[in-house]
Length: 247
Image (cartoon, rainbow, N blue to C red; front, side, top):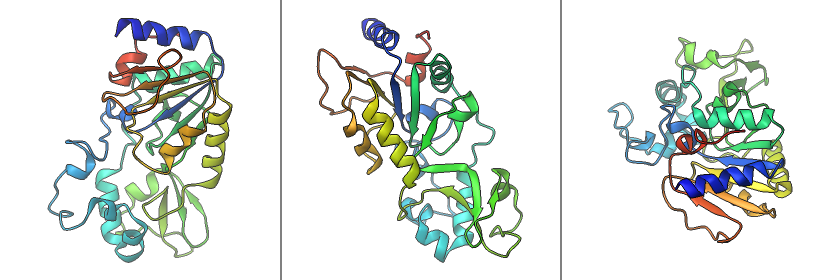
């Protein structure tokens, strides 16, 4: 693995047009559970929610038809305000400051990339850090839903305040997707980290890459057609890998 990490350092040193595409594995080292692993969110049994399919609890249908259930689950499971960025988030922020990283494309909704200092972050599944009224569109800060005592948080206009997270059954945010695809298409190096590339359509965006090097950093091996000369796969936790690199 030392040789692979050395090779990754060489790839990073040689480019100032890098894009990072990341998933849940980027934040698990900060203590944010992923969704589908053995210890993930969907396998955390809670008698209040065991009667529901996990995907339903984070769906538009649940929000529309059983909003009290939706917000109880959301408040219990999705609050990451006190979570801190890890070595992966911090290294990517340093790469951006150094002018080497053009963008972070993330499937995560926790805002940890921005908390670490990254500025150009495209959140293709939205974020828990923004809320808005579903009736009038008024925006609310990250604390509004989590700190509200009302079972269903309300706007001053009387409408329901919801999170700016892309729920199941909803379209991904057009502007974030458009910017993500453009960044990946123009990149010289694409680093894919902490994702199994199984969540679609987000995972399909990496197919727009036409640059020199693809680097995969994931604890599990991915069945992805890498070029043995130009590309690289490292099967280790991403924070461990990035902590051994310099900008």
